[in-house]
Length: 211
Image 1 (tube, one colour):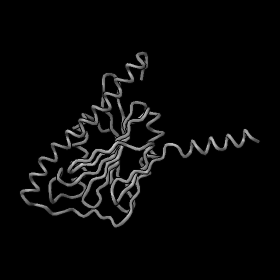
Image 2 (cartoon, rainbow, N blue to C red):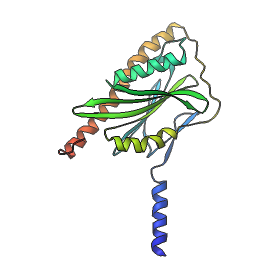
Image 3 (tube, rainbow, N blue to C red):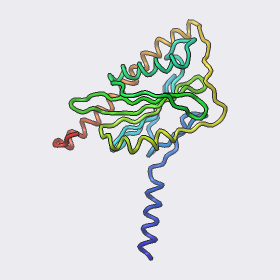
Image 4 (cartoon, rainbow, N blue to C red):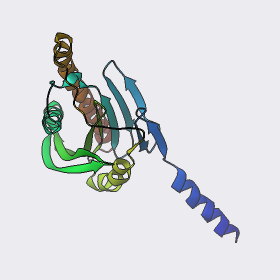
């Protein structure tokens, strides 16, 4: 009987462990395995968690990265192209998704590091004049497949939401757009560097490992 009680509490602890709800904004929440590191700049807020098998990332970005008077589809295309180019990644698959009542995108991608192809799954949704991106990256496909659904599906919305496009044509906006695009490329490049550093540490600790 005591063993059954101990086993029950062990299962309960394991089921609760690794559940941290992070408030991305007043509009959105996302559940990470643990509390992520938060980096907040003028136009981009990033949430990053480096775990054993995956890197979990979420971002909230303003519209300074993107041209005014664009359709949602063209904005999604521009974001995805910038994302892939910034990380020198290859597009594997792309599909439309819905987040609540809003339209979004899901992208599967990979990029090479030495002889290892790191894979990732990205979801992207435009909400209240901001882009929300959240994704996982890792070299172990099985871990990625196991972790991705729970993480990606944990994104939830609250409060009034819309996908209206802001009409901004001022010189200040155009200057911000150019600066923002440069910042976006630098941000994506820094994320790729973090993943590469992790891969190097893994290779150093496990020199005989073959992925």
